[in-house]
Image 1: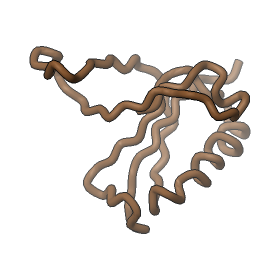
Image 2 (image 1 turned 45 degrees about the vertical axis):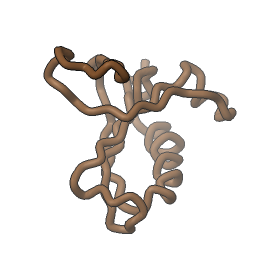
Image 3 (image 1 turned 90 degrees about the vertical axis):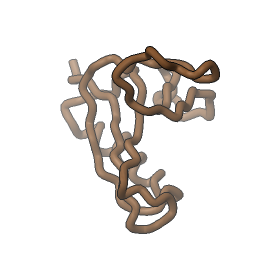
Image 4 (image 1 turned 120 degrees about the horizontal axis):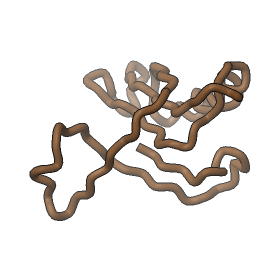
Length: 108
């Protein structure tokens, strides 16, 4: 999961952001001392299936943010972005698959 500052995608200037390794849980009753909790607020997400090596994913993100989003009825929302890495995820394997979740909201 990535949490970007509000204007991060407006400037495309290298900036700091938070990156979390997360897992969905049903409750926070037994959280290890060295771990934090995070509640992902509900909202609309555009979900894309990315197939290919992780190192080649930048082109897909450029398309999503620069072309698909621009030509859609949506705009980027200021909520966390994340990827779901399931059984088909294989890092640099060209057959690797993952879900890309991009937070969106309708354009005004």
